[in-house]
Picture 1 (cartoon, one colour):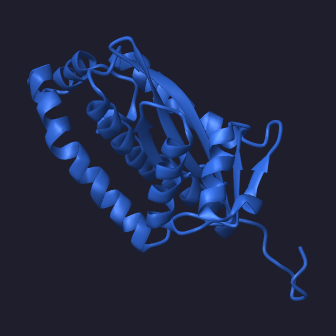
Picture 2 (cartoon, helix red, strand yellow):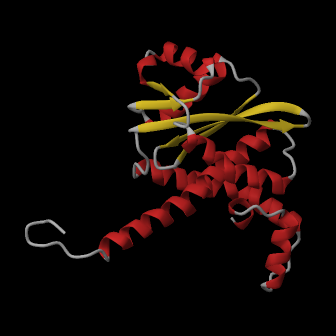
Picture 3 (cartoon, one colour):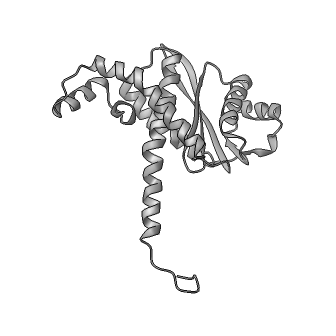
Length: 209
């Protein structure tokens, strides 16, 4: 999963493996990624859903454009308030229908949040009116930085790949990248927090530090 997790090209991964005594071609790495990447991502996603490794307190939604063969497409992303990427969805448009499909897809898998933070794109308001929960939408300056920052690892990875060939490839990679990124990043933060709590100062008998 080195190719997915880090902003490396296929040939860069080939060179790194060669330095470690593994002599394979970049085409073999491409085949492994296409064959096993979605399988690993699906297993990680299923385990996190069964363990409820996300929060329904507040979601952050945002979208960015990605060019495929010169045409503009949109990558929608939903993250919880802790930065866990819940869903990544690719569409050709940024209208009410696309936003509604994205929201239904996310809520079907993770349930309904208490509040949803978005930008001022009218498509979000129209889609939430259809779903019957416009009162849960929250808009404001800098409130959606959580979702906007979640695009940065993907943007770095996109730069290493140079381009996507088609919308199917983009959707597949965005889904796999999100699952692998959650697995490697969120677990590290949780382990660090657990270590900090276990090694903290002892409490007095009254329960006050």
